[in-house]
Image: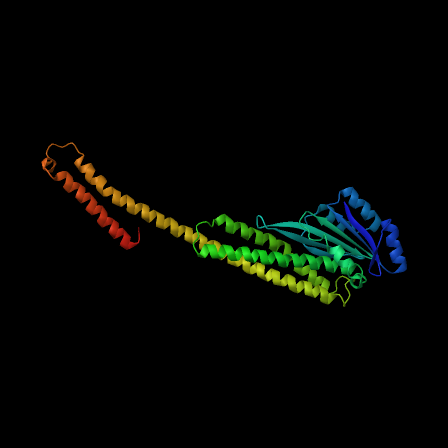
Length: 323
């Protein structure tokens, strides 16, 4: 559906009528631009917008298909950008993924949002408070969207770092409440984060290097700042991934050691229990010629022997660390 549409002239929002007429007027006057925002559009709805803006067919195909890798495609009169958006869910510590596609052309910009994990609800309102920035045209919208997406990455980076620090502390305190699935789940979230953030580096560099004509030299430092923040996040993600692998290995080693300790304790108790069992088994045999059975104190002596041997074995196992 169409979330919002407006014409911006001299950095000020104006109501938008027929998109093709408004776009033609902007091009004729050489000022202002049209900004249309879509969210999870149906194919018919997107086709209607395409008829108004005359988008490149390959870009349209990618937009309709969805689930694209972060990238930038530069066509003759159009730049098509795909970025992955993320949302951190506090209740489950999960990272949800969404998608934003931007079409920036001659006097227009089209943003297409996919999924619920999109932090773009306020980007238009924020830009409308900065007329000087909006006067730069569609490039201002592209920068604002990319900047907000990367700022969201940075905030999620802080949450992931906190989760990682907590689970690292639990593992190295040998807290038995930690499960291997907890570590693996966090590692999966980090990998999901990497799949969104890392592929954005190359498209941003292309924008900075001037492959898209609509990004003038004055705007390149702004995109360079976004890239710097993104590189910080990707560097952190690489370290998180390696650290989680080390934590998982440490946890598995601890589990193995605990299993060995448990087996040693079980074996020690079995050995201790075997002694009275063996003695009782000997004297449970139905032989007539067992002289000590007829001795007055034999019962007490055998019990004392069982207790003494068991205590001696217990002391020996304690000294060896098996108990």
